[in-house]
Image (cartoon, rainbow, N blue to C red; front, side, top):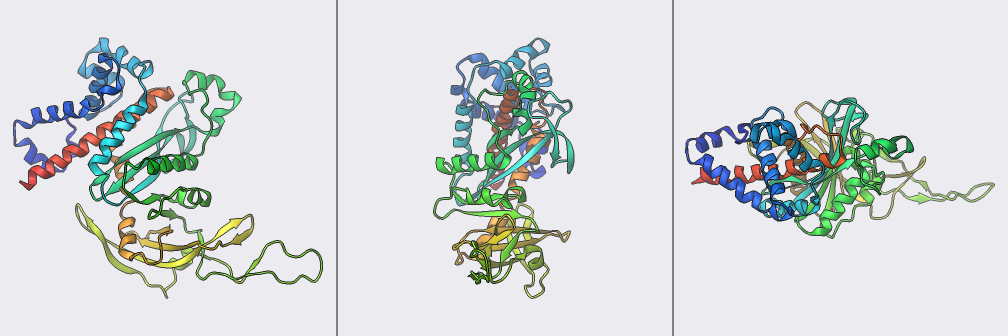
Length: 421
């Protein structure tokens, strides 16, 4: 049933050496799925839900509705499984709530990071919900694709996807797309939101829910260099952002004085003139007076995570048109990390000055797990294998993939416990 590429080879060898484990694995899956059955009002819904999850866990090459129905039920069940996705009257929110509660119980303890990122799915044609020629991260170029914004949690006990939302490009809300919106079943009342607005809303909601113990919120440069996004985060006391930014980000190494020089004629100056200008983070990275340090950031599954890094306290630079300014209280950490290929990553963090640098090193390791989630879900669980035009089918497919991914997390934990005995 299970796709073996999900697991550590050593754990697999120990697992498959016991002939009783196939039965045990099936039992564990049935017990796990029981948590979600109350979200469905009808027995057939529960059956199709279980069938699809089994399909996502299977070694099928293509994990979309038709191949799964054919493999597990037969040709006459293809249409019923399609209707389960397109017409079956169940609400996804209770499923997501249940999933988040289970995920929190599995990995939510400790002081972890909520991290946001978007990922794209290559799609042919022009008639699927949200499809557009846009930047596709997995290909590194502009391509016809759909995109979703995802939120992940990472901490001492593991990582997993927490929430998600479909991104719909702005033109999809124009009058020219009214017929397509109807054909793709875009919910009435749905309005345009940028990826950053979606991410901000999701993250604030999860923090307010209190389901996860959060010390950090993280994001890549597409979000981190958006100062409106950073300033709009609703962070409780003791929660700080650790946000990637790009080489063009500017900071003040010292707090500038704000001067109002006298003018010989005309109106007095409306805005202050700063005593000195900001510095780009690229220049700081290249400054030999602040040397790189080689440190062990953390102990990973494959050994110590070694990196070169430098850090310093500075002040955020905000811009209003062509005018730079700094606000009182905008003192931040600038954290730079150099990778093996000499690529430099830049991060800004609003944690207090007395925070030990080891805490920043820990935060620097918590950004990659969301990429690991995407890799596992796309490579092993069919996250990109959906074949549909409907908005709702996309939403349900992604939710079922997340539910399946949590089960694999639980199974891997079983492997670890079995090996330790």
